[in-house]
Length: 635
Image (tube, rainbow, N blue to C red; front, top):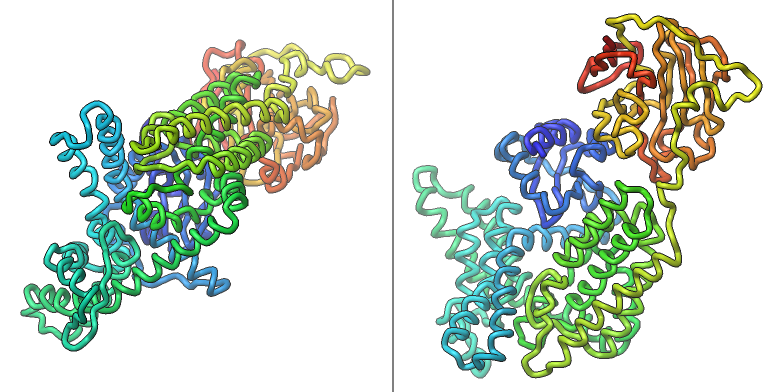
């Protein structure tokens, strides 16, 4: 995969580098902040290799990539350079309900702060799993394990520093200064003072300082980074230019740190505690309902990015040593369900390409926890596998609630990460985790088989004989024997982006079984005659037409992939079998938006049915096709 080439295409289709205010990546998505989202071409971006979906959420234009997202991001960064060079510095106008904007913005900030930190937490979580497993053999007092435990817990203990550093750039703050101010709250001497504040009054310049613990917290660190940004802007206005280098950092730290431990820290702690208390209240009074609904609908929560709101709760539960009994167990269930549904599709499907894709995505999901290829590439487009996964997840959610399953380490829930459910004090916890995984896999696959799905393999393949007028029982074969003329140029019947035939998502065409040619992702829903000739066959469903030119070219134009299933809906034909046409005549109109809204690939395939009569069939252009402009050269 040529990442540089793909990056150039993505940049072009989102409106160019000058339209990009910011871009970063999470575990599976490229997240763009664009000056003008209307310049982004959804359909062309979806057609780019490696892009499995698009989400417009919280002022962001998100491309769903999967495990290759880092390579995509690095390639884009190489091309556009620092995003600040293109940033307008002007915030886009926000529309819509203010409450919705605040909630969406808050969740997006949490997501932005956590994304760079997640790899460190996953690494530390794996070390925690190793410590838990080895403690059964070496004992918890083993000195080596104690050091390993210190290593793993450091990532969580000092996490506020990493969070502040990561989110500071979003607020246009100095990340190092934000980290320094946050580090004050984790200083051992500061912790001693906080312990004193539990029994005696502690003040700073007469202002009371509340006792609070900031290790492993998220919200206080985010607020501190914001305060550092605000303080930096104010300080910069009043300091002389010749003193900014040394005076600004000192003033920012001196002003921000006291604000952090007198106001911001306690407020952040209160917000985090309130959020955790709300969830605990739901679990204590509506435990079964909460678990079942969250397990069933978590895939859709993940799609919107709302799952990031639970991150402070998860990390707080793990840091307390009590374990997380909500999100990580549910993530295990839904990850297994999404993977199992995809595997079931692969087993049941007769389409070799879908079989290969779904099996690969399914096993990857189950063993690594990467759900996007399954959700966006298989289950969601096919609909019924997604329904099966949600039902099975809800049922299994009831089970994990009844057995009170908990996770005691951080990681991406998967089969490989099952040790995160080991509890040294309760050996049955890991047994329940394994049981839940097996249960949801079995239920999902069974439901997928029962509910079924629309298998692309059910489409009737177009036979070359159909081009010979076989569909017209009352007419003689319209195909004549024409003398092949070397050096012909075939004009394009549609306007759109050209894709190699080998990349068309239909093996009948991509293997050149029906002839050589190209695919075109149409910009407008009209097909024109590319030459003077005759209509060999217009299919009853109007999604495909066979033509013969006066010079001997036999051409098949097939609109979309699997569109035969539409039974002609969305298609209008202006010609009949046997009609004589001239170059530029309108042949077919098709409703692009309607067809795409039903989940069909709109790629129009143009192939030379009698390719064997030509030594070479080459693409005249490699980028954009225009009606009545050269498309293929035949020799």
